[in-house]
Length: 483
Image 1 (cartoon, rainbow, N blue to C red):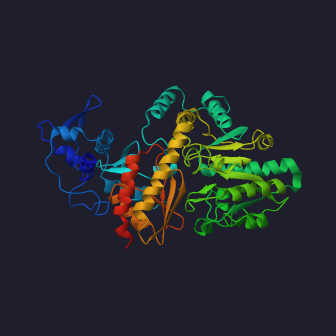
Image 2 (spheres, rainbow, N blue to C red; image 1 turned 45 degrees about the vertical axis):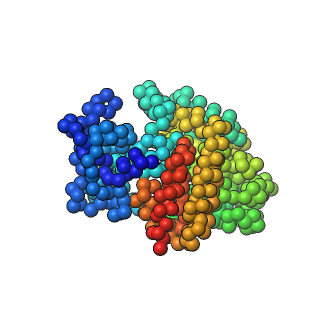
Image 3 (cartoon, one colour; image 1 turned 180 degrees about the vertical axis):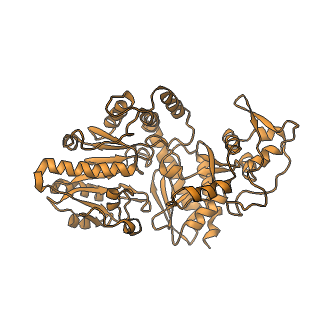
């Protein structure tokens, strides 16, 4: 803790440059000289992080202490030496990138395990993991070896040909789930778009021209931002600028089985889309009775049941598939975020009756299932499908929730700590932005959810107990930001 604290106290470039050695202009790193760059900005320049972040005066230190800086922090500073300053990067971005993201004023340069480093080598505990993407953290050695080997062998080839990584990944997903077949895409929203088409084609094959074409989804749900997936997403602020959307979508209250029964119509509803644990909506877990009731209603009406496990699946809840905790299986399941450990991939898992309705030409994707991302996904599955790994996720999730309740629960602005596994939400009585911003100054990166009133914590699944302790400590120290 003390060594880490010294790294957090000031920009690493100054930390390294202050080493008491006549040869401090370079360090040995991976057998090669590592130049020590100057500070990335003049001291008079505004800091893109808040004033309570980690900037303070440099103090003399020894060469041995400088050399003990984490390798990832050294890589971040070395990488930054070839970049514009952080302020310049942010200014260029505003000039050349479409402004659809409310970005945090932080330029990330490197990562290792559950930690990220900015261009000055400042360290952060990553409690967001790329929005539940980096299940194995940053720089996992086996993942890196698989990706490096596959990139050198074959990165992409058309879906007109067979490749073993794609076939092998499909086989692994089938043997570890309810599914009989898999369709690959590139993202979560594409997975849900494909599921919409699969559901309609299934109903057409089953019932002919008078087939069911409508859908049911739920309050606070999030299924993506492309036009079909957006039609299934309930939040008005996402929908309104792009209406009219796909018609025939009814929304019911999440968790309300009676409302779902009223919305599902035999012969009209093609599929019901539901997240077993809502992420963007505020980290709400469904009850067993609700999901089992949806299964019954779908069976009675002829509708397909679609589980969107894009955020909650693949080990996030302590089960490989979130629905395993509920004793319910869907007809279709959509996956994405953590599947390839940071590379773009999505998947639609289906039963044989659904797959049988699809014919060549019904759907496709140029980049989907390419050998590179599939090899990466196999490396991820090799680890997260291990029962011991999943049990450890559940244990660490319990620890995270326990510590949050102990250290944050006494604050009057904190109303609830909830979640499953390492998918946790801290419900506040107002906006979570000030707490998230203050936590960044304490070296903790988190994100919001719900109506902006939930702190969402979805760290890498390999996070350590010590890192969980540090993250909760940083959040607790940030509570005064709530007023």
